[in-house]
Length: 76
Image 1 (cartoon, rainbow, N blue to C red):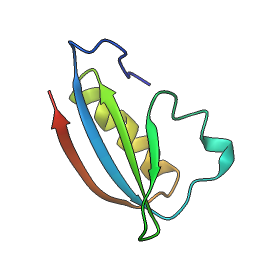
Image 2 (image 1 turned 90 degrees about the vertical axis):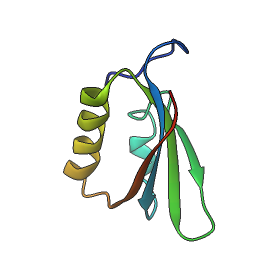
Image 3 (image 1 turned 135 degrees about the vertical axis):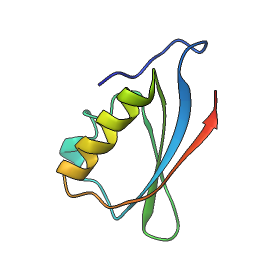
Image 4 (image 1 turned 45 degrees about the vertical axis):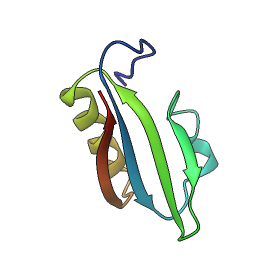
């Protein structure tokens, strides 16, 4: 997964998903923060190098049958 730890490159996104994640997937998310919400959704917050990295991550969520509610860039 093409996440970045460098604060000067990439953009930070918050991705809202429906439901819970199996514990076996938490390591796969790496540096992405997983924030439970009160409405049975999770907010994933992470920095991605570029649009291709974000698209790859979203495609992996889709392949895992995880429902994506929204994607929003919050920082450049």
